Length: 188
Image (cartoon, rainbow, N blue to C red; front, side, top):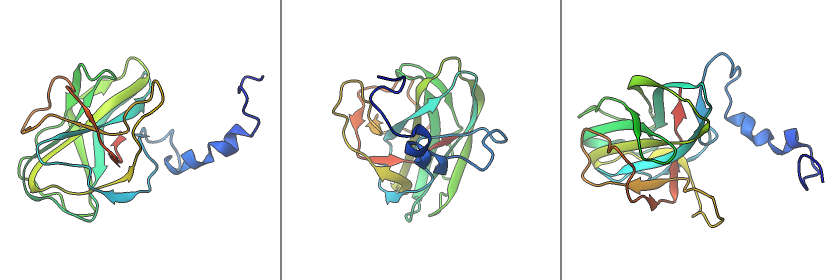
């Protein structure tokens, strides 16, 4: 047994796929992403319902902006949209962007929204990033399809909670339900 357990391969080679997430110089521009910058067009949103994904953040990170990318379907007649950040347990709302109201979200468009106040991360862990859009037709998002957790300790790669949400993120992530469609989110 080694420090790598029973693994006998070259760790650098095994984890090489993670390099597609990084920017050319990750020391120059702070960012964290939950998925590689590849993906499909996924129907990850339901009008007025919050979609939440876990995102690893390190102690010392300062999150100022949250980003998602629409897929091939634009928002039609949006009335509210925002991004938010909850602590790992989902029990505390750490920050939220301003409600975007009726602002358009075209197809294949990056949407980066600033948190009202930047959030300084004090402990490393899987924080929860929330996306909510209320619209006649919600946009699809760039992302992936994930499986339901089945091993002890696994978390949902995406989940939904709330209903009839409008301008403000809920203080807690209450009664989350597993969701197969996982949107790509980036914190900067």
